[in-house]
Amino acid sequence: MSTVCVTDDDLVARARQGDSAAFGELVDRHRSAVYRAARAALASHADAEDAAQDAFLAAYRRLDSFRGQASFKTWLLTIAWHQAINRRRSVTRILRRMVEPKAEDEGNSMMAQVAAIGPTPEEAAAHDQQLRAIRAAIIALPSKLRDTLLLAQSQEYTYEEIGAMLGTPVGTVKWRIFEARRIVKKWLVDRGHGAHDAR
Image 1 (cartoon, one colour):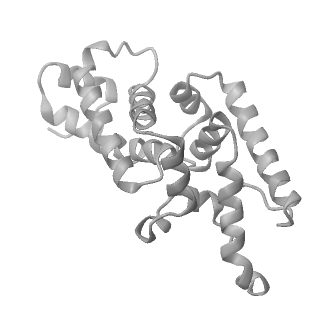
Image 2: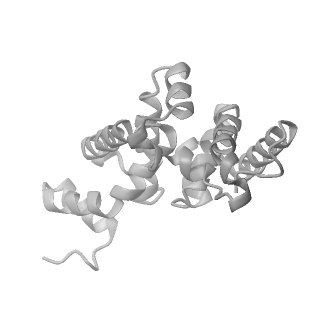
């Protein structure tokens, strides 16, 4: 049976009745958003993949607790965010991975996406130094501001979804994004890197 026109709520109802294909469709629909949420919290592709898998497993086990007060996607993203945060073993580990990413992670890193300001030909020689400075500025943010900024920069989530993941009102989400960008810009300017920010 085609699931193209079937809503998430219909799929949840079918999954609760033991239809594994229905839950598989939910996984397919939200795989990218769940991965990106995990990746915003974790510097490693492998850790983000593991957290995403853990999130889907946890969601499957908790299907009976889904009450529909938020969309299924928002509920799932909240689980994914918590799974990813639980994988953060230590601040040292996070900082080491963000400051010195593995070559395989460099191109895919959420941090690299946030910091990807393409240099002009005149800036080419300083590009690597500038990229590291932007990373360092983002890393230096308080975790609440950094997490909110990284989720927003993914452009995958609405403010409402970010608020649900972080357990924060939408107004606070907007303020944190504004404040994070302001602090990053000031940090860079104070260190002679021009007026670049975390746009």
